[in-house]
Amino acid sequence: MNRKKRGLWIARWLLRPMLVVLIAAILWHYFSGLQFALVADRIRGIGPAAFAILLPYAFVFLVESFAWRLAIRKNPPPGVGMLLLIRVATDALLYSIPGGVAVGEPMRPVLLKRECGLDITEGIGSCIITKINIAVAQSVFILIGFSLVIALYRGVAAQLGPGEGVKGFAVIALSLLCVVGLLTLPFSGPRMEQVFRTLARIPLPPFRSFLAKGEPYVLRLDEHVGRFARDHMGKFALSLLLSFSAWVLVGVESFLILKFLGADPTFTQAVALESTASLFRIVFFFLPGGIGASEVGFVTLLIAFGFPDPVTLSAAYIAVKRLKEAGWILVGYLIFWFIGFNPFGKGKRQAKA
Image (cartoon, rainbow, N blue to C red; front, top):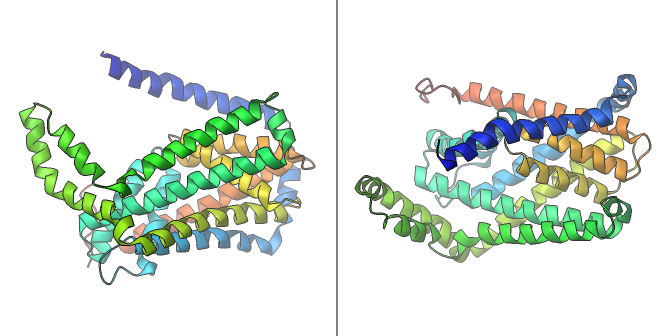
């Protein structure tokens, strides 16, 4: 076994299970003495207001669909309604299967071509642009969340030790700024073409032949992405603003859930919760929806914020969040059924009538 394969084997069969066990141990530490009757009482206390919890994420889907439409150069672009359906359906894959990003994201341009007749290269380009904008907006959102925690909740940072909170924030801030810089590189010029040309210098005839076949598509894709920010500055800025607005709406959702569960949160705390959960989902991408990892972040912060009976509140909050996600996952799979598309069956997908 070579060194690369050995590293992958260690990551898959040793590190991942160890991280999962660690997360499970932390959650057991917090919830081993949990009284489920109190959690159920908190959730029942929401009553009919539970339907309002679904609204913020419905607007998240809608806002991100508008942002996606702005990244499509076809005139006229597909309708927001169809983009919304594709967005909800593919998100169901992201949150319901391990490594869902690797399945859901590539499926979007396929569905764009199938349902909207959009050229596959343009579809991929629009998805890349939209994903970059969402990731940049997410990085800014996480940075704001951690900034608010460090600035307004000294007790949270103090739990890490003298000066450790500031050091941790500095590391996270620097990392996020580097991420934003890397993410926006494709907008500064033909970066994919440059990478492609570098790879083409590798003296392997079969590899060069493979690259030659894909060269026209790469050049078209690079033009679409690389020229978007420069040629469509207004659309680019609006798309980025809408992407950030979607993350703010996720913070609104957390605020409403805590409020309905009887807590008295501030919007700052809601933003901090979601920014922490977002960071955990990125780090633990191999867990569907960051399950377990996000929960650790939720309960740790809710305890640190000093809410009364924080463990019960955390369990109720987590249950409501996961039930909401399960509801949207169900809607996503119903959309796949409605359009006659099997996301898991190769060669079994029905052609559109």
